[in-house]
Length: 356
Image 1: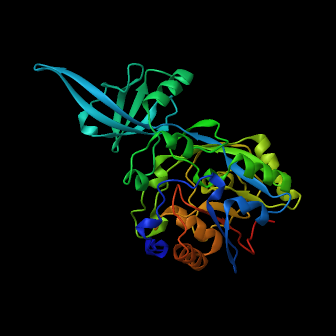
Image 2: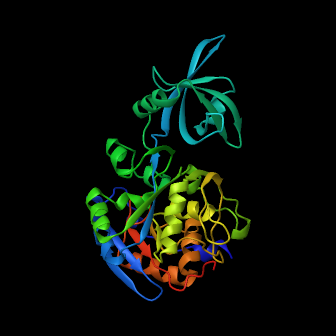
Image 3: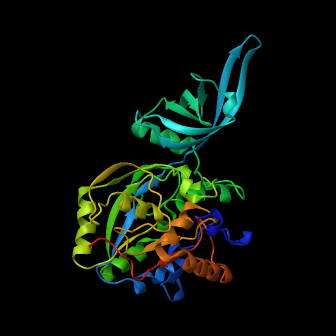
């Protein structure tokens, strides 16, 4: 497979910079192997069955973009340099791996001040990033970060406008719980309380899992042979209760439908060869591309993805490369809005083979 197999032309005006209001007013393209239906997110209950189990990622996006000052004493006195920081992911010892711009303005051991309360010491620099040891932890860190930081909008939105106070609400799911993501599980942004209640009345059930989405989700694929691409890793957890709920749904003949590629990647990581999901906690770098045999997911609700991205490869694995080309051509022709703040699709493959 070549990277060009997952390319397509996307008009710039279809890149959404703000979400639909209310959330469930976004459009929903419902695709099977043979049909495409244009609907809205609020219509989702019409396309689901009683007993369907939606798997929801309950990660919470942190305000991971910070602007700070590095001070350095020298013979000429104290000099200052502004440093822009984007947190990437926590490390095992409680620090944070981060992008620093410009990285050359800091040295190991130096401190960057973000506010009167929040600072971080640079412990190491490698591979174009740094590790930061913050002066606060726990709730104190969360509070200081909320005050000093801003939402880490994806680069294709940040290139068009700066993050503002509205993004603090818009770029967060209504069920966000576990802080740690630096990007939103965007398929979940289409749900509001009213839609969730109507799904419950339909008999749809919910399972919560956690995958802390990292900035690596936006990294481009740089190799022409996609089998040579090295996936970024992200931390996730499937609890014992969550695994049992998913397995019970399948045992009772119901569909398991992850909301978002993050939830899908996590439950597939937690599944054994027999298709049973096991309690799971750790980093996953699973790379789902055409030829992958799905063990758990029966369908997928997801946004529309970037050309030549690993997520285009994932949806191509689910629906087939030719079918995804048809679906995306329809979405572009019908002016669906793309990417994080854009519209959604419900992909319902037929004949999906899974372990016996």
